[in-house]
Amino acid sequence: MLDKKIIAIDLDGTTLHSDGVTVSDYTKHIFKQVQDKGHDIIIATGRPYRMAVDIYHQLELKTPMINFNGAMISIPGEKWPEAQAKHVDKAIVFELIKAQEKFGLDFLAAEFRRKFFINSFDKANPRIFGIDSFQAYHQMQIAKLDDDPNAILLQTCFTDKLALAKQINAYFNNRFNISAWGGENGILEIVPKGVSKASALAHYLDVTGQDVANLIAFGDEHNDVEMLSFAGTGYAMKNASDILLPHATEQIGYTNDEDGVAKTLANLLL
Image (cartoon, rainbow, N blue to C red; front, side, top):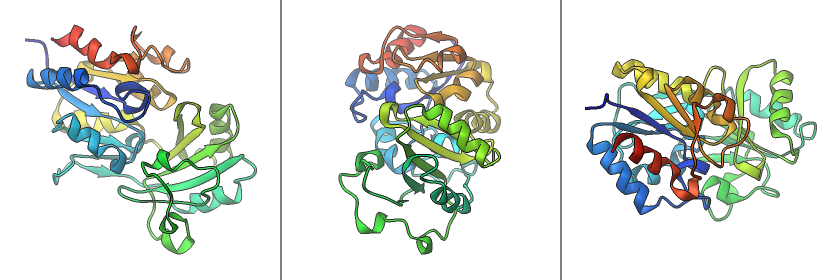
C-alpha cells in the first residue's frame, strides 16, 4: 500500500478545461478511484468559495477546500473546527482606489465568501465573478464595506502584471501578499500578508498530522508558486506559465484540456 497522499489541485488552467467550467468525466472517474484508495484531494484555488463549491460537489470531495489563494479553508456543508478565514484591511481597498490611475487598474473588487463589490463595471467581465451580468447591488459603496474582505481582486491594463504586482507591493510597503492569475486577463489578487495556498495546506497538514513529503500539488500560474515549492512533489502543467517552472519538481506532458492532472494521478496511484 502506498503512503496516503494529499493531492492539492488548482482549478483554472489545471483541473478545469479552458472554458473555466468543464471537469471531464475521465477526471471525475480517476478522482473517485484515487479517493477510494484513501488519498485526499484538496481544491486550492484563487476562486472565491461561491465559484468553487459546485466543482467541489461535482468531484464528490469530502476534504477541506482552499479559496482566495489560501485566505479561506473550510469543508463545505460542515462546521469544521479547524476552518480558517483571513481578511485584508478594508482600508487598503480605499487606498487602492485613490491609486487606481497610477497602477492602470480597470477595476477593484472586494471579495467575500458569498458576495463581492466592484467599483467599476466598464471593463470588467462578469464571468470572472461567476455571473452573467452585474447588478446594482454589486456596485461598491463605502457604506457597504463594513467588513474586511477575504481578498481584493484587481484587473490591470498593463501587460506585465508581475512587474505591476511588485510595484503595488512596494507602494504599500509589503502589507499584503499579491499574486497573478487569470491567464491573459491581467488579474491580480491581494490576500493578507503571509497567506498563500501553501500556508493553508500547511495548516491542513498540521491539524491532520500528515507529512509534507506526501503532498502532491498541481498548478499552472504565478499563484501556485508557493504551493509547488512547498509540496513534496510539485507538478506544473504543460500549459503552465514560465514563472512557475523553476518551482516545480516536474512539468507534465499534458495540458488542462488533456486532463493532465487525472492522467498523472492514474500513472502515480492507480
